[in-house]
Length: 89
Image (cartoon, rainbow, N blue to C red):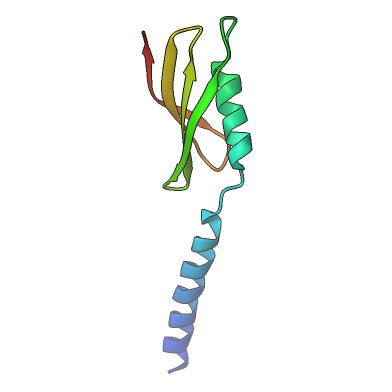
């Protein structure tokens, strides 16, 4: 009986401790800043159009009107950026 209780307690602990890592370490403002710095070039300024949270990542849509460029990036909780798509006029 003690073994069964110990097994269930261990499983419960693993589930609960695993769910605590879901919260983002990077704030929304930091994620915006990361995207802006990544796409800022000599021509124009990057403007953030929208921010959504999906699967523990910030999905950020951006635009650079002067450069005629726009796109979508994801920023994870560690601050790592991944380009999901870019278009140039």
